[in-house]
Length: 247
Image (cartoon, rainbow, N blue to C red; front, side, top):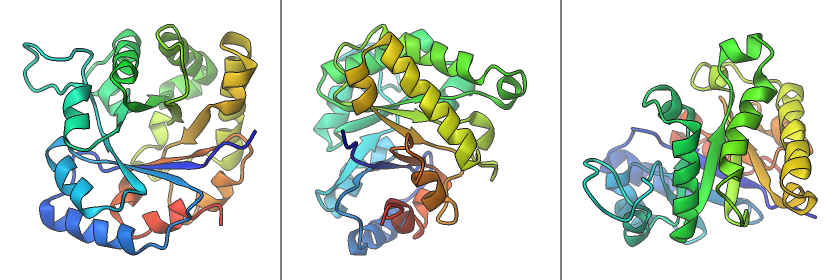
């Protein structure tokens, strides 16, 4: 079964109306591979603005959402709010949410399930720290994080998993294509054994961690890498080359 390549850009806490206007001009001009699903994770305050500038073929994602429709949760956003302003995807469980803001596996799983129930598509992030990798815990950590999500998700149609080794985010270090493929293959095997062979065949697993125009083709050629979640390079014109990595 062919899995559609999916490339996400995570703008993180970056951007202004001026810089987003420039970036959207670059993305609109492309040209972008029509066989790739493209999603950009935009700061919440600029979602409507980015949506107004981008072609419909490029979807917009929130970078976080809470597990409730409304309430006394100062500073949080409900999935319905993101949908209301033009985002139909959301990134949940990014390593920065886990590492900096202390989000637990269980909270992330609850947020994934709630966003799906509200009609959003989800990029659910997992990945190990450098200490965990050096301790030989890569698979154990990734499986633990995935298991928490799997406990809350019944229909995987609108879920993309993003494997992002924390030690390779924003550091300039990248997992080698072989290292990345090894973890992606292990995750697919986990899905076969713990969810179903059908979900394992269909689920897209992105690689995230210092993806650039220079390394994207080799990473994208691996059999179990189904796209990228791109940080810093998604703010630059080279994001076009990363989207086109399979051409």
